[in-house]
Image 1: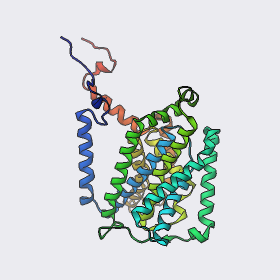
Image 2 (image 1 turned 90 degrees about the vertical axis):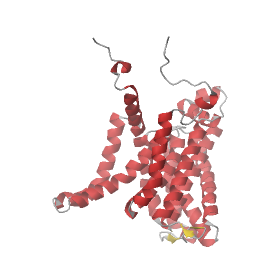
Image 3 (image 1 turned 135 degrees about the vertical axis):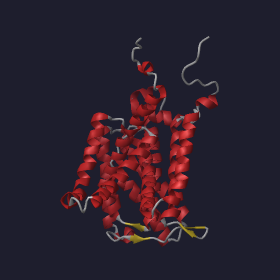
Image 4 (image 1 turned 60 degrees about the horizontal axis):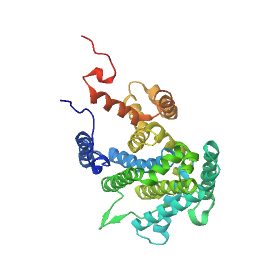
Length: 357
């Protein structure tokens, strides 16, 4: 009698399931329980950080659809987030559009802008495409600061607080549920998208666009669709930033924002939804961690504490370099390695080691 070893599926529904194994469903249940309990025990400070992580997760997943899954380099993340933020804010402030409708409109407008700036992808690849998206960043940034009749120039735009069923959503506790719902919905959509025909076309273009064209994939249409889909969620992240603080200012959407989000998906793992979340959490929480360390050693080592704020950018760069050297596939790969290890523990010979005795 032989014993099966491994994961075997006897139905297509099981094979296509997002979480087919009991342990996967258990981990998901624990995560869901943590998310539900967290806002009731967390301080306003940690609630604010959690909201920032959720918003960053939406933007990171959007960027990962373009860069990680389709292989199209983009340095215009800040620009597309700005389009989403300003569109949602101006519609709500100047035209009285309900905040929910203004957020959806911002996503659509940002998707259209992403499609337009994605047109050069027909003939540009790699570094040249990155420069083209960098041009988009500079154009939008110039428009934010100089188109005073619309954006107000360098002055901040103050928005009305979003209200749902008479409840203000701009508090940390109330906005938390909106941010978590948006992050979970974005992750679920992206997970299903990547298992669809469109998602497989994205991956084919990423791996080799010439081969993808040979097997019948419309490469240009697929690239534009990737830009549009990515920009839709990036615009959602920008609109959420606008209503989270009830203020829109150009300083939140500069080139450094684009670099930070690119770092999130590099550190988290390209082509991974889990990696988008892990990278967004690490890069968002790292400055807060350094700040808290500085406060903790303020009395015992005041000189070192005074230097820590200036070391944030250095630590940021060192983290990226270390991941590029030691684990280019990011935190997602480290998590996979840990799961693989405990999947076979304590039977070391299953990992290729020779049995003795």
